[in-house]
Length: 188
Image 1: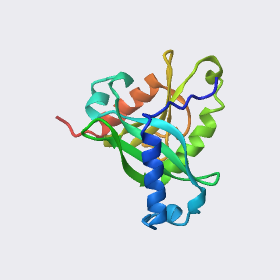
Image 2: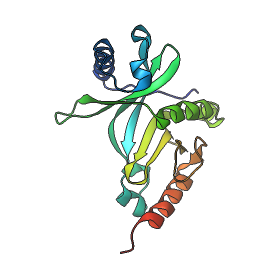
Image 3: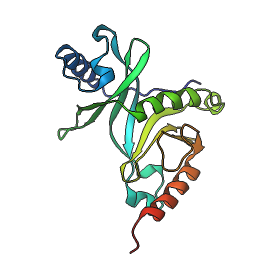
């Protein structure tokens, strides 16, 4: 089975694409790749839901079931080249609203990690949904391959635990994060 890209709420793709094109038409991008992109070639790809996990969750030994959905992310392409990401966030009324366009190391790391995880033999045995896990307190982002059977994470570069782009099982990933959290937390 190929990697499954979940469907965001129906209004999300149009909102994100509308904002992307409005920024491009108005020359409002301040980042290099987006500013230099060919406006007629800009498009969105690879939708995936963003989840966040807090430092308290990590230190308490919570599993991935404690991760909270916070928005959606797309990769922004100029033709076939990935140049940025576009993210939404949950609005007070429960809908998704455009939050940000970003460039930087996590965008390119996402592209690299996707190439690795799409070749995993586990994909043939089970269907995995593509997600993004963010642990802001530890400056960690990871691709999260979720299935009812197992979860696999691939830390994105730069990662304080290393293993950038290398798929690891959730238990090992969370254990390494807990060790990092203990090492960086001030004593009680």
